[in-house]
Image (cartoon, rainbow over all chains, first blue to last red; front, top):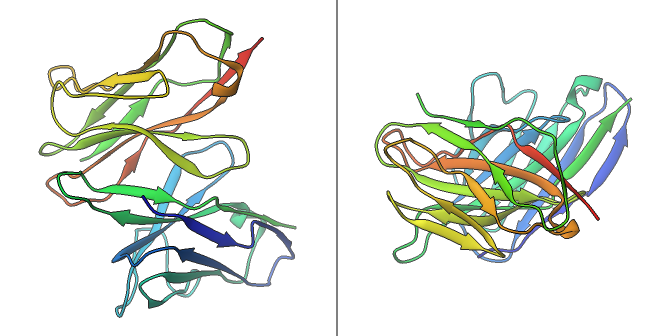
Length: 117
Length: 113
């Protein structure tokens, strides 16, 4: 398994500002993922972040709005830029780990609960 | 395309009742199937998984069987407890299009004493 921590755990921000969310993993992983979970809804993949390359964004998400850094194999950040109330969500970091004979699994951080006023 | 359809909630049960949460999927290839649980205020935790047809995943009294013929992976528990109150997500991964995860919409379960 993998132990993942996120900072901050929650924040209340004013519209027009930006927030950077940090994700730290207790072991080296190749792929890290950022998801958004809007109130009462399922998870939506924002982007996939591999160390040493540009993040790959899903349809509907752009780098200018959600810039991502992946400086090493245990850390990533997601910035929510120029926030609006529609960005109020839980943002989750996850990592993919494989073991011998195991299917690909994803392990999730505790999430960052963002409220934009 | 790949997708997961889950039984809509919320579901409210009395303690010791039997639980079933339905999950069906559409996928290319032969995916692995997962159930994740999200307790209030926390992130998602892997509850159980199955990697091939007829596999049964089990954990903490929960079970789910990978049924290829009905493309289903229903979650069951014989006797729920108040501590099982959470949101449950069905998911798949490992299709012909790669290892991206596809999640269902989640089913909220509340167990009352």
